[in-house]
Image (cartoon, rainbow over all chains, first blue to last red; front, side, top):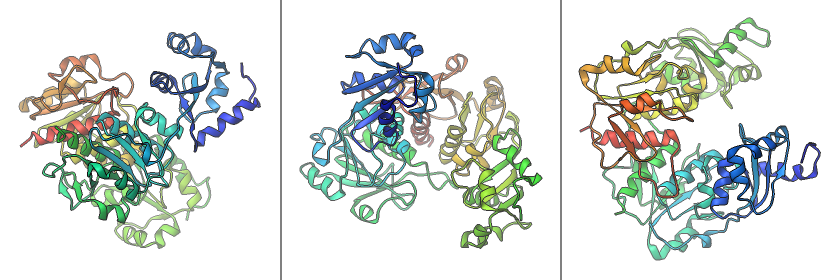
Length: 256
Length: 256
């Protein structure tokens, strides 16, 4: 039972709040449950007595290979930036490879995240990407780490399952996927081909730009297909995740 | 120039952070500019000297009917919960009526937000709603106030322009819109009609439920059309705003 804020194990876990490595902090029963279901290596689980005594807790903790470390609720809350980790966190190993770690093409649809800064946006992007069945998510150098606790949480588990490659230059992704001959596509606030009349057939790599500055000029040039979502005036743009989601669902319809 | 945190005008503005009335706090140049463009009555504008001296500031402040109140940056930041209000806030009057304030049908598409709690979600919903050209947004009793600063911000201006009715019971919306004979629709995580084979032709009222508990049982019963978005397993659900956006864009395609 950990009940002192000076316990040395806490120092180690506190560092994971700003995760930059393969050891990741999973906050809350949903994410920990998803990790166990996905067969991810969970190093350590910390639970409150209250969670352990709940129906969900009894079921979930019974699936662990080794017993959890019990911890006071107040201390557990101090380890996370979740509003409420609901009595359970875990430390898991989530190694992320480079472009070579992406699997062989199946749906022929990939996402390239260019310099995304907000972990919540990356998580939401991964959730939609998995929902439409992309083959993988490639992250540019400078994109936030996919093991950031907030990214993992916002992904609702998708970042635990989806093939994610880090530190990928656009040209390297192109080389790696060249046998599949994908076209590059991107979203343009205006001036692109209308989403509903564009030829959206995969294989496609959809490039998604940073929140503020938008897509890098080199990527814009690379994109053979610039898509605009028709918007009722005076609306000029959508939230980035919403725009990507609307485009992805439309692309998937053209797969068959 | 306001430079003391004890200035009595600040107390009044601080109250607007948790806005529950028709006086609303607009944070940042984008939102204030949108309000001026939309012809909204702006009671008071507070700006930092730095913002006033910038190119954007000179242009924007020149459009005001009366001169802004200058304020120290540190104090201005303390008045908002925006990460960065960027040197400008304003107090505006945004009266919100009941169901009778909704305009006559045009596109025949309405959204009914049932007990939404998160102001950011309400704002994002309004942004998508305006982007697809809905006729109006009706909020159930218990839904967060549309004048909440965070809702206004997340809406990127849409909550300044879109017809929004508050305190609307589903039955009252039905009565009010009965000449248009709209059907009620809702999203179901599973078991609904596939989004791409459903008859989505307006007139439609799309009911959107609360973040946690989902849609109220009475609304589920009222909904003639239950829509499910096809998701690649093992994904079980989308973020609520993303799901609504994907459904709305599909509905709009069936308008013509």
